[in-house]
Image 1 (cartoon, helix red, strand yellow):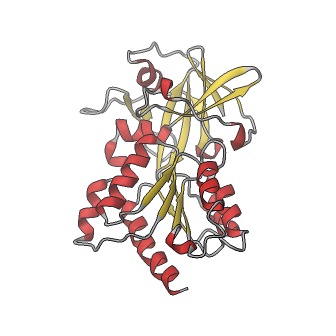
Image 2 (image 1 turned 90 degrees about the horizontal axis):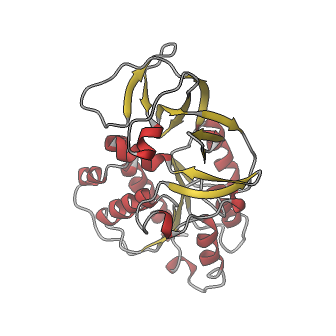
Image 3 (image 1 turned 30 degrees about the horizontal axis):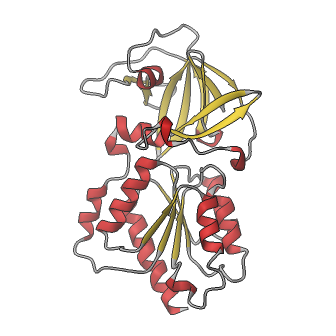
Length: 288
């Protein structure tokens, strides 16, 4: 879905969007991030409102009478993002989504997960998970939750991770390393992960090269569902366990992941649950 902040075009995966509504009065809350306007209550649900123009441009922007709230649901929570306008919904292929180069983020934690051209205009796909983790750290992956798992043995089985968000990649890698997994190979999208895995399909000891795959759903070039399908429909690779780890796990996408052959599907930010599932699947794969 394409929307505007002032005169600039941005995008969000429509699967994250639950509703679009006119902006409404917001009740400010104390001790919150400067980009959090407060809360409002449409019907029976209290929703936090993020001032997206302020977050993106660093100063308070004037709120217009025609501003909209994009009501989203991901990471198991509802959030409203203030925008200037919604321009439309477009169907694009993940292969059309280009990875932003390092000049847009200084090689660090940029807020764009992809760039796409729509009707001749450049649209920046925002990393909403990164935005939420920065504004509300408690709503993101909690690396310290790994401490609750107690002392763990080291595990050197090779794990492939496909995740485009820079900040979430760092958190996942840090969490899994803390949990004792020492052989982690991270890729920025499904295409890069697939090329690596496909090149190994004729290896005599495949399990020693790829023991398990963890993939996000939304990624440029190739999404996690496509990656899962390619692995599970390949006779040489189909026994590799695949975990979909995404903020977008809802009933519909869960059914799709299951149809494609995903072994497990876990909603972000449940990192402790992910570790437990990895333990189980790696144990099963060793017995095959």
